[in-house]
Length: 341
Ligand code: F6P
Image (cartoon, rainbow, N blue to C red):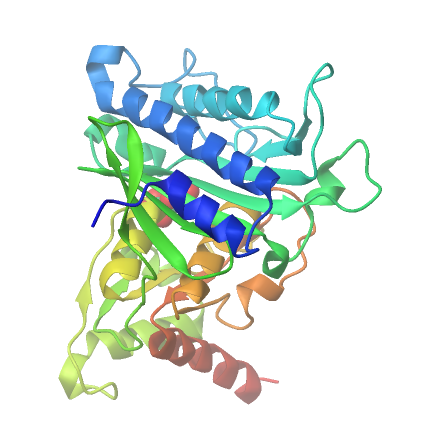
């Protein structure tokens, strides 16, 4: 049987009424941009793309040092999406405010929000990084989309995905009809469907969390992880393994492949921050991909896809992956809240 390219997969989905021609174009443009980012990432030191963007003074809106590849990836995505006529505006981790499609180009009905290069502390050590994106509808009647138009709950996303730049480059995508994985055929230059309809095992013995923050966690999170670490002698009755890629794309990809729970909880290091990960371009797209693969995603208390965003760069605690395990972690938090109400 011949291989199924991303284009064929999207055209077949379009024939089944699952996406519009404009959304198909948008996804193909994002995929093409990811190929260019993959080339830039792959060149590493030979491409002169490693290291910080400025002379130590280049800080993004999150207060994080920008890497050269953050800036390059952001520019590639903006430039690729400017002229197709499918978008009303873009927003990015790297920009304080959303950016309307430049004058002179037609404007479309979708909004694209992305983290151009997630896990960028991995860049200089030649470990996995990725691009995360989410597609929303531009609200009816809006002709000049601004930040407020992006503030829609995650369950309204029409598509979400990521591209993982690892030993191979993989695009993992959902348009609300399952989660599908494509591998970049570098010789042909096209993404090929390599796993249709990913399913996350309901149970797991593997968790992913940055344990160095343990002392800053709140009591129910401490109690939950204590019980995981107690293994088969503890209340959970089984031994757990731990993994941490330090790039959300890598951890979520492992979970979509073989199950597990990924956690970035609230912690008290900076009590003003409700979490580390950003709702609009990290938590929401990953939650959609995970739910579409049979998993679950919560803040430890509430379903992520039901949250009403209040700002473009808002942060949230994230618990996602194998359904039973996410429900178990959520139970620890809700029971604690109930006992302290
Ligand atoms: O975007 C934030 C991010 O890089 C995620 O991709 C990753 O999961 C996390 O931060 C890593 O955090 P830490 O630096 O605590 O390991």
